Amino acid sequence: MGMTMTQKILAAHTGKTKVEAGEFIEANLDMVLANDITAPPGIDEFYNMGASNVFDKEKIALVPDHFAPNKDIQSAQQCKILREFAINQEITNYFEIGEMGIEHVILPEKGMVVAGDLVIGADSHTCTYGALGAFSTGVGSTDMAAGMATGQAWFKIPSAIKIILEGSPGKWVSGKDIILHIIGLIGVDGARYMSMEFFGDGISNLSMDDRFTICNMAIEAGAKNGIFPVDDKTVEYMSEHSIRKWKEYRPDEDAVYDREIHIDLNSLKPTVSFPHSPDNTYTIDKAEKVKIDQVVIGSCTNGRINDMRIAANILANRKVSKGVRTIIIPGSQKVYLQSLEEGLIKIFIEAGAIVSTPTCGPCLGGYMGILAEGEKAVSTTNRNFIGRMGHKTSEVYLASPAVAAASAVKGELASPEELEVK
Amino acid sequence: MKAQGKVIKLGDNIDTDLIIAARYLSTSDPYELAKHFMEDYDDTIVSRISQGDIIVAGKNFGCGSSREHAPIAIKGSGISCVIAENYARIFYRNSFNIGLPIIESKEASERIENGDEIKVNFSSGEIENISKKEVYKGQAYPEFIQNIIKDGGLVGYVKEGGKKVDEV
Image 1: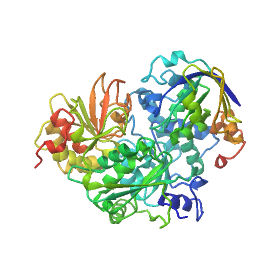
Image 2 (image 1 turned 90 degrees about the vertical axis):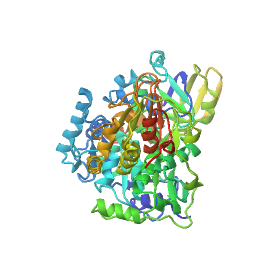
Image 3 (image 1 turned 30 degrees about the horizontal axis):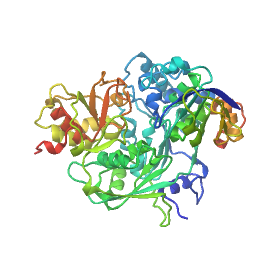
Image 4 (image 1 turned 135 degrees about the vertical axis):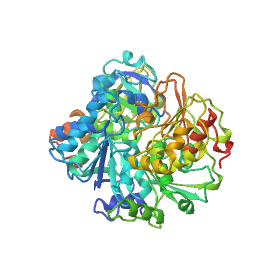
């Protein structure tokens, strides 16, 4: 019985040649990540465990991004705990304001993760790096603390779903629409405890940014990880961003998959998740024209340069609808600067949007765009649970940057096709 | 190891944002977090919980964010145990790590109703519904998991020197 891509990476990090689904292993970690919300309890636990030094100061990443820049005194205290720990432990990959960005945007961008790596992070969207052909998964603060202390973590070897992407997506269909379509198809527990492994000739038609978005939301189907095979685009991305050595893992020909799903990318349409679950999906042509109060474009899901370009393409020479608060958040300093150099920031501001420094802020109802009672937002973020972006009666509609930008212009949930784009 | 209490019944896909909203994540104090447990779902739940009460839920309990604050808030509120048909994987791991006993049982999840008095035996995995006079089967905990919970979680367990981290 052969192994999946995920199983091969896990086996390689335990020194085994063979692992099987359901088996428990203890694996060596290439990177351990935490942010300003999850690190403080983890740091307490690190010392409570009796640890005094991290296992490798170059293999820890600490990123204040959730409630940073500090939103209030309490979050300032949390960030301070993170900062002091990073200084005391001489953590190489600690990113203060000015260098920082949203954790899952900056780790690949700064070349800290490459194909074949095994990464855990105290943040559920750590699964993003599967786009590079790495195994990465979210854990809690205690597992992160044990990882920082020992450089190891235990795993149950997951089984997998094979998702075959065929063809080429239409003009307004991006990675976000593909993953929302998949979540709508299999449900929020459709891949619970499993890997989502992507294959098919359609992959070559997807940018790295599309792939990051797809793997980022694997957790929204309950998956342990999402992963793409390495191809020319992956190699190009890694050589541009990293000096680290990478390793490609392909599944065995007789690898066992619990389920196989074929997705015809040509037939997909822009897709929206209605409240209050990511699997409550509708294609935009079948979606009710909901009047909206706010649009958010950004987050670890859609805060990369391609996302900014798509939004700018729609917002150029247009105005956001009066009364629609449009908040655009480049995911890192690099994305911000690139957006500035390409003239995208000017387009956003002239359209009547605001541009924020990188932060997770509104995605999780932290700050920078909290919704009041009964308000509705179209957002390129990843969750639309009750109360996620603010008041418990507020509503979040998850969509691509194209749909979000078109909705900002129309003042209601709208398809980019409804606007004539030059 | 046993738990006994009155049941608070919840549905499928209870997410960690619902268990503890992100706006309260500037602390990891169990008692502070417990004040806001399930607030956006039903803000009267906290006042109705008695020490030892048991949550019984449906599928995919604890889906969403990796916040360990979710099981910490449940534990801090006085809930002695969670029973669900199944769990989201990060929540499942976090619960043991912070010493919150959780157990999987489809039968118990389907049969038990709000307000039932139930008793859970973690060594045998048996769940007794005292109100309905029924018994359901859940999975039994191996000894080391019982020890982790007794020691208040993974940190306490490691400190107690029972086993190394890697044996967990």
